[in-house]
Image 1 (cartoon, rainbow, N blue to C red):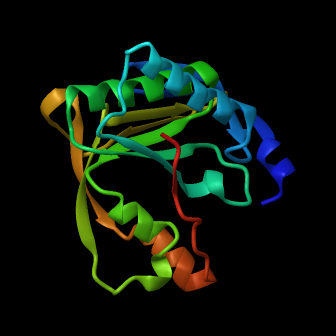
Image 2: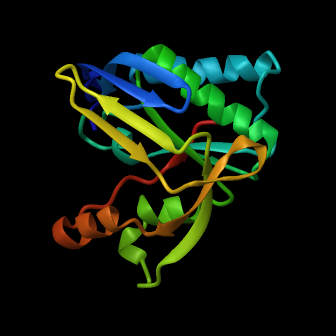
Image 3: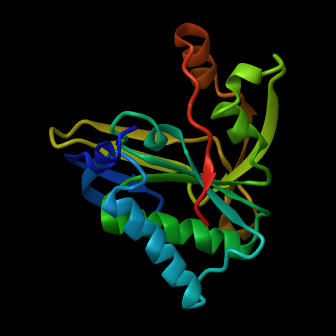
Length: 195
């Protein structure tokens, strides 16, 4: 991807709700060098310096479409570590920043990067065996409402867990990633650690 592609931006005036957050007027960004993504990472570091969150025992990876040569309407992040009150605070603050800066961030907690590394960067090496990994989020409700009043409500089957988190088993590799590889030979870029 050329550096100027990172700066691409588009606007959508619909509404997104996730858990207790609701926001209107969203931006798609072209890559991780986009100023809004850089501001987001800077703000997370600032929250850590203030003692509001702590990444000790956690790693945050970026993956998915934001690393590809297209405009992405969401930023996929995976927090690696164990469920805890601090994990909840990190996930909550990531979502809060997403709603402040109007760039939707899809983030969940997983105990290992193994599944994400297979999905993104290593799907061509898949041995044919699916496997599950536990994942946690701070809500199981996601609502999109466009400017014409078309509302889509998604209540995921994530069950309430410790630390006010919702948990689910994710099956790897994702079928959409596998299909894209098998049908088009496409391999998503390898995730990388941002914090």
